[in-house]
Length: 336
Image 1 (cartoon, helix red, strand yellow):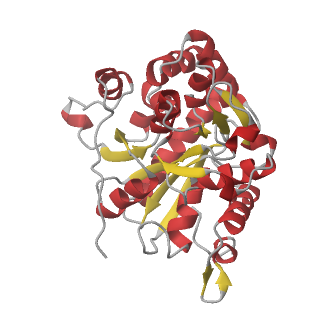
Image 2: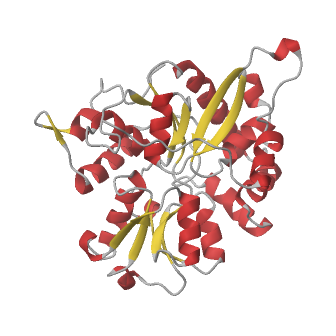
């Protein structure tokens, strides 16, 4: 089947580009003895502060990695780029890995050898946000922004709206792409509500937007970001990156780099000092923050599978696709 492919490109603003090439540490080594670094292109949705900290702390260097970060406009674009080789590793929702590994009706229309290599966070404040003055009853007839209707954040949105008493049929879905794109759309009035996290939620609240429901108040345990690959070609590289990110998470949770976290959150996410402090608190939240050991726990996978089973059920060869995903030999999670 013919597929459209969104190009992988650098972060669009000069400030973001400078942060990636200089401050974040995605820089070229200059000495001959340092020429053996593994270069890895990583696809991301929101600027990942933990990756920034891994670079500035020297943990990426210690892992032998030279990382270039690429924003992706949507989850289908991210996984198409992994298939095509434009990206080697993704920082993505684990639900995307579930979809592309087990659901043949995923947006790319084929099953992929996608797997999770390590866990990074538990969604960092993920919640359903409405424009200023919005209340839950306003969801009826509202325009609600999603990445794509089949994404994990979209499934969480359906579940939260349902908990608020509004059924899936009572609002209009508007595909708007990645979380930063949806934040901009919400602030411009192009949608009435959407799912936000990872600093985008804090910017929304600062602009007067309203938190209608938080994922961690209704669905725990939950995973928001994982390190993922397609095929085993770049599996060892992904393992090295996952270990560096896990070490960074442990440092953040131990309180040994608070100033660096606040600085990176201001620079990468556009937060002021007060919001950056709140972001640090989010990283340390036991329910919604960083994963200290990088382990993908079964409880979180069961939460994600239950959301997909409820809101986008899929039967493959007479079996529920999520039943296969949770099998011990499913291959969903890299074991090394």
